[in-house]
Length: 334
Image (tube, rainbow, N blue to C red; front, side, top):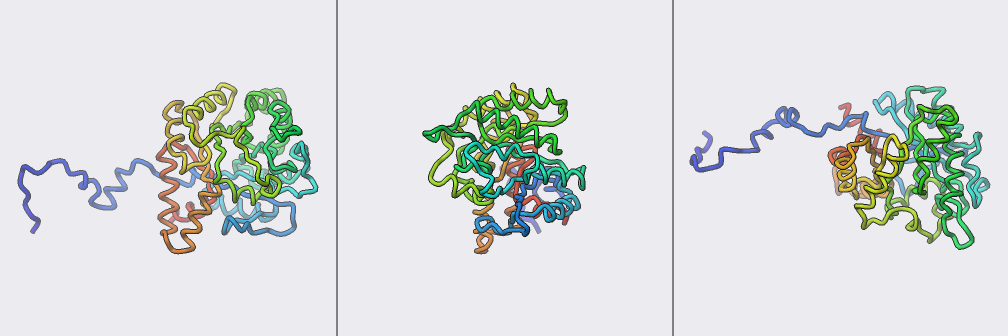
């Protein structure tokens, strides 16, 4: 028989709403679905797929392999990808002009995916770091300083090429000032009024990007240089709101916070302040840390993947770029 407790005990017992799995499910506030996930994919000009040592289970894919990946993602209910190119060193220059080549690896991949899977949403990265010989996101002067306005001119051309090749959203991730407005104006001028812009608005100069730079081949080019004079300081929060406000004013359709779990407070502030479509990027370093823990059996892989992605959505993200998109989709289908 249950123990009878004095009537002086609290009448409000929150545990009643957690008593069974059915009750917990009924009252769940944040529900993660496959439509909340975007899969970042790395593509290569090489003839075979290539594993990425710092990102276990992730590979640079040939275009044929990318098409197979898209087919599986769609079957699992993941409707969006974000392709990033690994460009051969022979194409890398100080100005990153190969980014504007319509026959480059990224535009070619966009056309092939759209031809085979027109329903797949594509977020095309707009930045020069995969294409520059120095690994920076823009064109540099003799002293290594990123030149804002001349870089924006290159980004305008790159965005147009990607939009014409089938990107649903161009996604400037460079953090140059004024680039959203200039890209929007050029898309409008060329009749691409339905191509969206997802701006990496609050992109921090984070140390969690290391494995990504390995994946796109910019680590060696960047060397010991950093990106702190154009990406955001990790100590700043109000500045993120200012950056987001500017990108919205300039015509962004979606804003992004990057990284995600280390900056959940920023995601929440952005969503609360602007009530605007907000994305987050669960970045390569966050992925690599979890993979290390999983490999050592320190954490429960399935539960941690879903808990992590749910926390990002709970903070306010409408969707998340995550290397766990396929894993999470499989778990959600169970």
